[in-house]
Length: 158
Image (cartoon, rainbow, N blue to C red):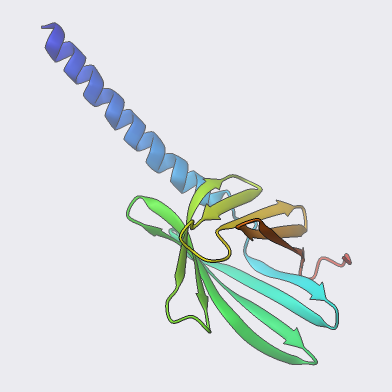
């Protein structure tokens, strides 16, 4: 009798954890609803632009562009997508033959962090929003680079 009670409690606990995990990820992905739109970062006479949109309830798509002397070059296609039980930040850089997948390990209403320890650089990417400002830090092997973006059309300057 005790065995059945313990087994049933164990099954109920596992079901609760599974449902909670799914709900947490669903609500976690919706917690980055601040991401869509355009983000600009001035770099001397050039500008780096990231644009994001939610393409479905399980995926966001984006692109990174360089604007220099009036010419715009798309240098990366981005997406945040679900694969099996995890979410990933996927960067498709034009010079690379394959996309690079970074597992999202932390996500909340103002930031997300993703990692790929096998990648040469970066191994870690952190997006941190503060109002109309967005900081993107890429790091790995003792190196770090920060990009500071401003939401397009916010009227502020960097």
